[in-house]
Amino acid sequence: MVSTLHGRFARLLVVAAMFAALVVVIAGCGSSSSSSSSGETGGSTEASGNGASGSSDLAAAEAMVKKAEAPWTTWEGPTKPTKPPSGINLALVTCAGTVNGCVYPVEEAAKAAETLGWKTTTYDGKGDPVTQNKVVLQAINSGAEAVLMAGIDPSAIQSSLKTAEERGIPVGDMTQGVAPGEGLAFDVGANYVTGGEVTGAWVVADSGGEAKVLPTNDKEFASTVAIVEAALKVIGECGGCEALPTEYFVSSDIGNGLGQRIASKLQSNPDVNYVIGAFDPAVAEMVPAIQNAGIAENISLISNVGDPQNLEWIAEGNVQKADLVFDNQYIGYAAIDQMIRALNKEELWKNKGENDPRFEYNENVPYHLITENNVGDPNEPWTASFDTVEKFEKLWGVGG
Image 1 (cartoon, rainbow, N blue to C red):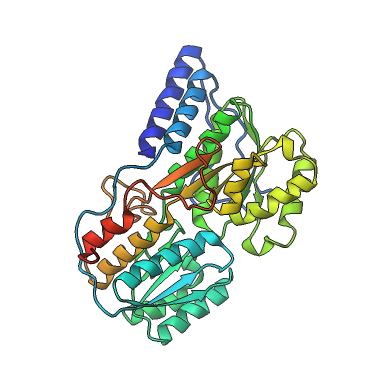
Image 2: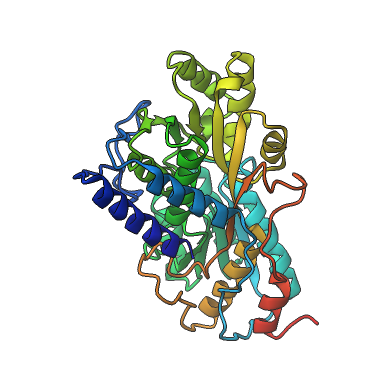
């Protein structure tokens, strides 16, 4: 759906260029998480605003935003049934118990596993690759027959994944946005590149094509990198927009001065009017710091995940104005679906027409753009407009 929008966006840019008789050089950042620039604060990822401008590309951005704000009504998940094995001992591992983008999908996967009569044990990776590696090994040595992680970089826990592979234990991931390999059978999360394009389109549309942006990013999560870099590419195609160098941080910075650091950066760059927050738990520290700095009225911030506090700020019009959210219920159930197929040694469900290996096995996770136009109840997690549980249980031959 969004890839079609992006294609339309590109065609509109070409038309605009023809009408203006301009030769456009479009510079932007790539979407690969593995090749991003230095992790130092104020790294080199930048959209300089030297692309095409005009009413046509602004209209295209507005159309993309409007489409992303609409309900997700169409089932685009698997259609081939699979029979769940019984009595599986499943280990669930969060990247960190304090990062809701990792916790929510694990909670939903646990519900799906319970429906199948599986035993589940949840482990906290505590935002530390050493701990994550240790708890995956602990799970394996405690009798886990399958391991499902959330937001964990497989390249950082290779010793435990090698042990799992040697023992024939399938390992899956959620929300990380990586391709299978290195001991990982699959990853289930949204298409974070197209989600990032929506993020960038919102900045362009909301600013009327005149945004000066401070991007923030956390390279621990490939999904976050893909979102921010894709957003910057779209912003770089806006002739009246500009982006500062990206402010990088890690999850351990949250609660340790991150908010003040971002507020200070904004104070030293008073013409910045938009911030791309890497994800909601980090933004939860940025927003109060921006308020305390007395610059809240100058800033419009967009983030992703869909935490209740962040949606409350959107409803209030309080610094954060938009959030890219994902159907975490769908993510959890889709990951269990792929795990069933892995345990059965069946072919995993592969999305038709998807050529990016990072997203081939994500079962087309729904996502949505929340703004003041559609925020609803901040305490109600967003889900697609169909019965996800019923759809998956029918595929598995269980439930009512």
